[in-house]
View: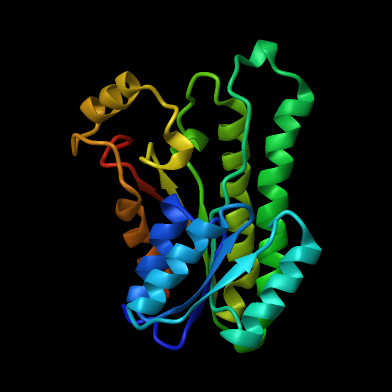
Length: 249
């Protein structure tokens, strides 16, 4: 799955799934822009790992909900690495965890708005260059919570379900330009975002998972790398569940 000559932009690339994706795509030869907003040291560490392995990488600081910041970041990437061929939309958006009956509309709206504005903003920013080259790969990172209801995760699951639907429209409208858009939907993954999940819950999920463990970020990055590659050229508008078999139909 050679990605030599390709440029990838990874939002939320400083840690967790984003960091694993940045390293995986770089290993396949892609030049990588590691996006972050606060974790500069972590993002720089990923850039350094890629460069030390002989690859090309740059920092790309931007709040991906802000069109101006995204435009500036992409302009810097274009100047240093080239036009973006691959977008991995992965930035984590915070959300409230509480029973629906106790939730305020503003709390639900915050997650929906943040999730979709980041997705919309990044997608619109990379599409023009992809359309002009008639080639592009867009991978959105969703969650199994979009399909399987999890207690108190109303905001998260609803926002990710919206993301899943959005990806299909991106795929449909841009297929004539050789652009694919797909979703990767992990289950529980050991990341900073899940560090507050009680060990008892992690153990229960591992016990219910056919592969008998909770995912690591590297378990997700392989699917991302495949969908970024030429080998996935006839796959678009799909959602790939990466959860160790937990959601077998």
